[in-house]
Image (cartoon, rainbow, N blue to C red; front, side, top):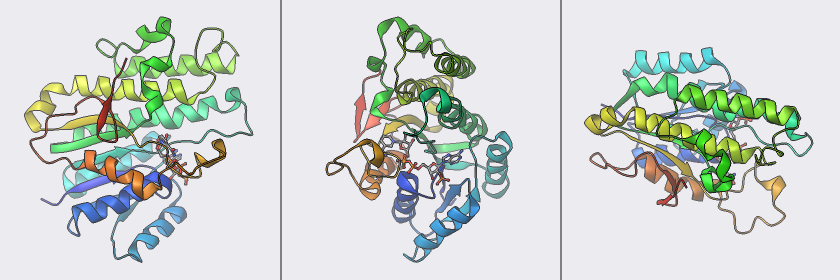
Amino acid sequence: MDTVAVVTGSNQGLGFALVERLCRDLGPDAIVYLTARDLARGAEAVQQLESKGLSPRLHPLDVTNDASVTALADRLRAEHGGVDIVISNAAARISKELTPAEQVAAFIDTNNHGTFRVIRALGPLLRENSRFLVVASGFGSLKNLPPHLHDHFDTETKSLEEMEHLMDHYVRLVETGQATAQGWSEWINIPSKIAQVASIRIFARLMSEEARRKGILIDAVCPGLVDTAASRPWFEDMSSAQSPSQAAVDVAWLATLPAGTAEPYGELVQHRRIIPWR
Ligand SMILES: NC(=O)c1ccc[n+]([C@@H]2O[C@H](COP(=O)([O-])OP(=O)(O)OC[C@H]3O[C@@H](n4cnc5c(N)ncnc54)[C@H](OP(=O)(O)O)[C@@H]3O)[C@@H](O)[C@H]2O)c1
């Protein structure tokens, strides 16, 4: 059976480099979906890879739209009967022109609820020896939040739905100016990335029996600093940043670990090493 891989938010940045990497690593028989919320941008990205002799397939995907995520799942089920590699990478950027209160709802809807939609729709399609990754960040460790907030992220007991409600609560706190007084970070990416990692830990916990039986790996991954249009405005000196192609190597390594690999499982991984949750 040919390997089927999907990368969300892959018309530019790290996602685009991941599609290129997977096309090369998996070889010409693999089916690699380049997904984009804007079909024209997606088609242009596919053309760029075709000019390098690669053949990704284009699929429209907006992770803020339930029907769009379901349509991708329906296509994967109908055309392939499942999926082998899912990389949930799509992310909204933080704008310097907007206050946190002005952008937090859209940001969380894409980065957190979007991850949840992908877990819910594509999780049931995971085949034997499949790999499910969410691209998070080193910010996604609990040590970046004060201890009195840690119980909210108890991944041993919480459900995915509770994590969704927590993020809606966080949005309201930011929008009403109460988040900082309650100890939440000013930088909305930190609670968002912690919740992404928490969601993947919860998903891994819920899937643990099936994952063991079928050889499935579920992890969060931090690519390190990558020179993309999302990160560039925030750093004066990007000389230490990786290019997207460089950053894609270690992420693709995790996504293509050979059958029989049992670990890492339910972890946050950066450059092939586990970042502790606490
Ligand atoms: N860059 C870094 O240094 C860095 C560091 C740590 C972690 N990360 C993580 O790596 C991932 C990729 O980041 P990046 O720097 O490559 O960002 P990017 O250049 O902004 O790319 C983000 C991608 O997500 C897509 N996207 C945005 N909203 C979407 C939606 N609603 N539905 C589907 N796709 C959507 C964008 O599409 P459009 O082109 O249509 O906007 C774009 O293709 C993110 O999860 C980010 O948090 C990045």
